[in-house]
Image 1 (tube, one colour):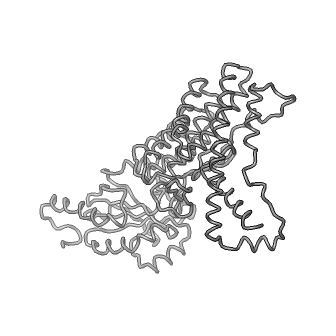
Image 2: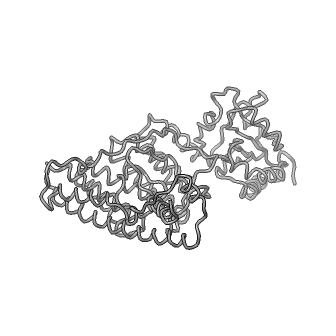
Length: 481
């Protein structure tokens, strides 16, 4: 393969992965990054705007900040792929040449546009596999990089033009079939192509197409609430908001809220879509929770509990809502320790208690540990720490404790089936992120459920000083400082 053809292949791959598509698959599931998802693909169970990206790269020219899940984060349970919509009616074989501008003719024109080769894709050379491999290993020169950019821009323009052509043809077909009950299949096929093209343009930032997708979801639902077109229109809007939540959620949390809103609409409107609805709600709830949008997260979790109460996701949501309601309440926490004893938080009344849910494999916990340990040491006269370990292997935990010098008592079940995410405390309080750190005042009341290494010291001071004043000089456990 020559440098030019190699560049072209790279350009095509980038275009297919980017925001410049024309045609492609039905947007049947939320997109990752800025790609339209294909029918039958599994649904994401987690979208975490607000954490440092670890893998994905933003699309050229978008300024987006896609996000990858970090170790130490729990995904929602139940990740069975959802079935995509049926193939559009326009893909069926036509026995005879349709009349020009008839619905069938319009659908065939759309298909013709979608399978047209991209400019330059016919380029090809005849080289041996060995030569091809050597060529691929060569770094791109400045001229080759510029050529790649030029090809990308050309392809972007072509794809946009084709998407606009598809939109025009699809809208014409929709007008001609909307009131013809015997042409519902052609209507649905046209809607399929219209939504796909609009989504591709919307992901490029086309404002008109973004607004059009919102209008489509409303219009097709009002036309026939349980129709295939209504389902697909709402799901396409979920795709768009999910993609933008991933790309812009750090700086524009409104997209996370939009993703949550339209996931809830999908779940409430389409009663036959339980598997997909549950996954969407779980993803939206976690996204909102980690972005600090607690009210939006509660709405998603509450819908899971009320509408899908028999699912594993609903059971987990019960624990999360229970955790949301902890602040200001007396904490109930007890469990077996690694020494074979039973630990209860009641033992530590009179001192503040730092509760840490952690695991040796949770990188965020390991990264925060030095600062956490330093703060805990500094305030050990006034606060004690209880660990709730979520590892499965006892040997790994013991080795980690020895290496790090951690001496806090650890709640850890002797029953292997009750370890890890199956820990009764983790299940009861819906723990889904590590570390999760709580602060409990000397009276046993939870004051914070969102502590980290950065704010632990300030919160210890804020909680303990009022307690000292309330005791009117009575010497607290651990002495005074």
